[in-house]
Image 1 (cartoon, rainbow, N blue to C red):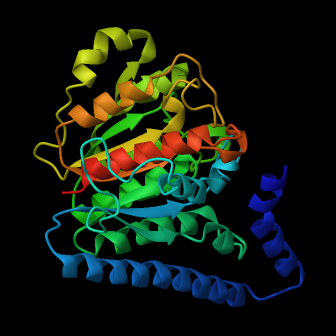
Image 2 (image 1 turned 180 degrees about the vertical axis):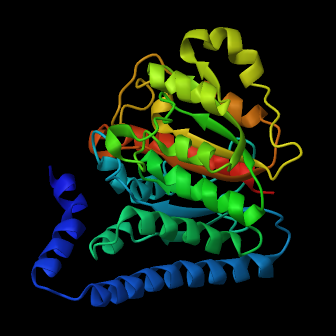
Length: 340
């Protein structure tokens, strides 16, 4: 309930201003100032971190954290808006060392750096609608990518963030990418509950925009007839959990991104069985084990140009933060896959 009130705060605030007969151009100018200030913060932080990494030298690609705390496009619970700081806390909590399984050292800024969060709630509090908000997310991602050798590793947030992030990556690189999407759901409704930016519709927007050449969806176990029809319409390769034992060898030996701009990885935490990650909004038993996911990631052949981790809901996590640690481990291993 509290999150729902927060999510609607900006809309209510705008309604009050309109009721007070505030000129629309005055509102728009104020919104533009807030948006510009938000982008300036991301730009300057990315520039500073980029200068540091380039001064150290030796990095061809560095994973760069960018938080996008959107929760209002969720069809059920909005807790994923609180996830980015919890994931960061878990990455650096001290209960484990800072080395990935493949030996990358996270304390090295040439491997992993952080430019902070897009101030989503502050922007929405000014009455900014989703069309403009999604543009702000895309522009923020592009600002990160302008700093060589940064590659965005985005912390959600609900899955609606994947559309503006993938759009930005594709536009910045000048062509489509191959997408590896791990999820219990295909998130490819045309416009779930009438919301074109719903977290259940993000991949419909991606495919409509031509931002992906191939879309492989793995871990699917909650799919409707529309999900299957949309998959066929867009030529999506959907791998359901009911056939995972048959598909395992193929999925653990993927080769993606050849002849195009690279590979994008999107991991919805609910792709994992809830025994491994209970802190999600949509609990779907029968999912991937954590080692299944790591085997797919570690064995993937391809140039990973960007990634996201989404749909962790801290409000449903265990008291000891088990799912936060799972999300953090995913970020750590994606960092190892991106950096070089």
